[in-house]
Amino acid sequence: AGSAGQQPVVRGARVALAAEKRFEVFVTNPSVGARTRMMISPSMTCAEIVERGRKELGFDQPWIKNEDFKLYKAEDESTPLKGSVADNEMKPWGPDGTELHLIFQP
View 1 (cartoon, one colour):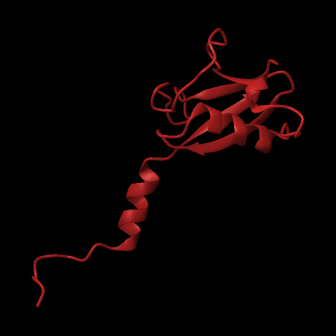
View 2 (cartoon, helix red, strand yellow):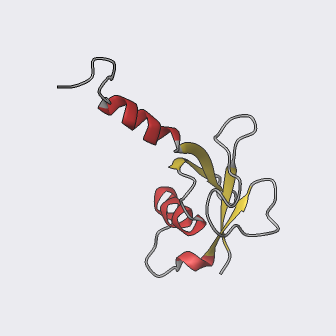
């Protein structure tokens, strides 16, 4: 039968491992002060954050395109973010964590 030295993998350990990869950031629309907390993963794209952020902040009107919103790091609104969370070196929320600005710029 089975080896006495091996322990079965428990579901909780797998869930904890998967959850480890996700982390929290803040997404803010500075023009109105709306703010939301969002759990993201390294593979998530900036476009996905824009889409979720629009919905969570109440800016998801159907006649406005996702492309009309730009995503920036709070400390640098000079260059819109593109690519994935990992590409942009986002960090979990905390004193040095990531705050993103979602700005309407058609």
